[in-house]
View 1: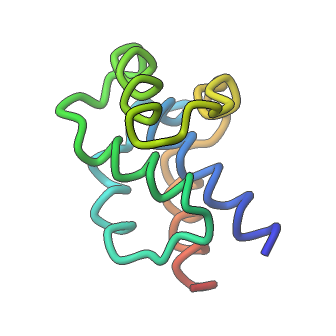
View 2: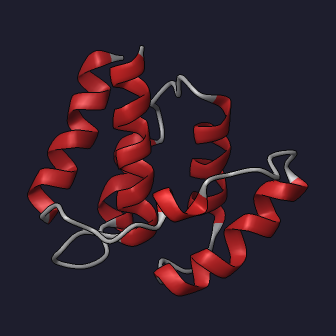
Length: 103
């Protein structure tokens, strides 16, 4: 279960901060639409990101905390979610596919 939660956090980082090659939100959201999230918080963050009209990390950083607070999650560790990207686009998509394989 801990591995699943770590993969979910990594997927959220990819959605919020992108990869070393840029934003991958449009490639990852369709893949994760049918995923069964292990964490209610992670699922709420995903839903908020998917509903956002922007994939810009700075705009998401401004938008998400208020949105999640209204959804009942006021104490999110946003620094972890918005930490600097270290993965390539292909590595990021591979992590998302690994999440689905474990589902």
